[in-house]
Length: 557
Ligand code: AMP
Image: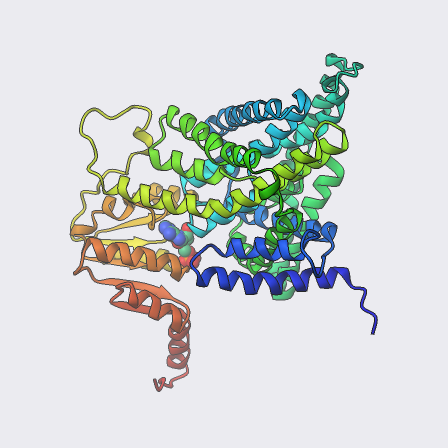
């Protein structure tokens, strides 16, 4: 039978090889990413055997980027995004400038001239969305301030890239010394591009904000899980694609906005869950597609320039990011997270070098160095995060220096410790927590809520409930709730993984505290008990009990 199914073979061989090598990598204690990248190298044109379709692989990777950015948008409100603009905009601009200058320097040394150096430097300056978001998601940092800054930074880089891709063809003749470049003529494409981005943002805020959540709510009320799932994919992929076609913005930016529009809806969590499995599968294909681009022999052919390239990505960019974040008065842990997040390059760089080569600005050698630099930096990136985890742990363990607080970091200091004693700490004030808090109030039991949704927090404050804003799993939150003097902890959030983190932290801080947690399956019950919960209530079982009670039967357990 004749097989001519390049899409199927790219997906299947990619996933199967990535799976096998990912497991092997995990087994020998390196990041599975390395396995995925090597799977790509094996499927690429530079190694013998099967060669997958590069163009298809790139498109599949693009779907991974869309789903990832959509997922991130679901955790972001416009307010969150604007709250980090003061650091994200100057941070990204300075970092891009530093990396570009370093790239131009290396380009000069290799005899490429200004145009080649510029493309090379810009390619080294932009981080990969997929690598950054995966690393943050793995550490559950997306909802933290550090995570928000990193994502804001990424969005500024994304916009800078959109502009660069528009401008580069226009200034190429100038850079090549062919003349014809009238600098004032550049104003037009820049204005048009900025106008399109603004048009997209306005369109999403005015039209999208009304239509998209309404559509999702309508579908949710049909009760069809399948249609809901379909709606989520249709919205994320549809908006991203539409944004790229109509407004010329990147897929990533389009998807991010689609997610952000939905973040205010109470269905956002459900929408995020629906995209998880596909998102992960496509993110794996992203790494495979990167691996396919790389000719491993470059390590032998061009070792020193490659080393210098990797040095700029890993060290040059990190030092610049670290410096500027510290300069803005943020703690070391934030600066380290941002540096580690950005110490890699990926998909944007590939697009940029591709364009640079086709315009005759960058020699093939420059492109090969960027591609190899990307794969090496992506492989080393998890190591950076491991070092970061160690350093942040040390920083948190170190005694805090006394003395007057730095006014710039006051707002980021740990929240003050509550004066309540013998109180109940309630984590989460949603469907479960709100019922609990009403009863606690009626029973006149003192309690304090930890809740991370700003709208819910506002409502609680209006009702004069003691509340601490933020993720209860974040450092210092439980201390701020005066857990040492509490009479009990109720973990009323739906995510048992996060619940487990909270329970473990609470148990470490107060070994005798009664802890009651919420679960939805036997595995979750075991997980929460393992981390130190005294009692775990499984929602589904309680529903069953209540149903039987209502009908006059008792449940044989
Ligand atoms: P529900 O599932 O309706 O009971 O809602 C759970 C509530 O817990 C929501 O209001 C969430 O904002 C909140 N929540 C979830 N995770 C956390 C967390 N780690 N820290 C604080 N609040 C949380």
